[in-house]
Length: 180
Image 1 (cartoon, rainbow, N blue to C red):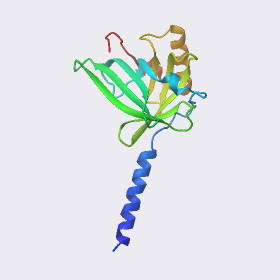
Image 2: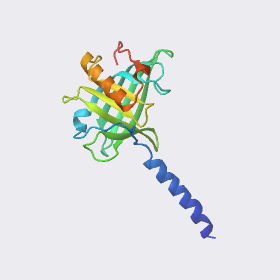
Image 3: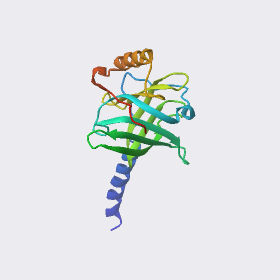
Image 4: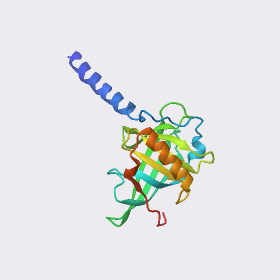
């Protein structure tokens, strides 16, 4: 009788392992930043541009705030104003490093065991501007510590994004006109 339970338990354990280890991918031509300093990356970022997807559709005034959790994961607190619903929306998740903590390759989850790639592929020395690639060419963000970004940084990030394979003409340029 005991043997009939072994196979379902092994299948369940395999599924749980697969779910907990999924995510953390990076587009083929992208490389995550080396010598990444997560403590400098913590804090509030304004979303300047993104490739639109259902989780952020109709959102302006989008911010991401990163802080350290007790278990050494990173708390991800995303907020944005939904112009269609006329209300603020918020999603809280967590991020973990995929490899070493000095490589800007993370995986982030807002839904339990399901993770997705979050890769810092370019950042200025002062950690004021960042280009972030998702796990595929469907996801990309340009972030800034301020509500705007200098034109030369924007040009540099767009060039890098195109080299990776992103279709930058599809970017949504986020309005940052409300206080949050």
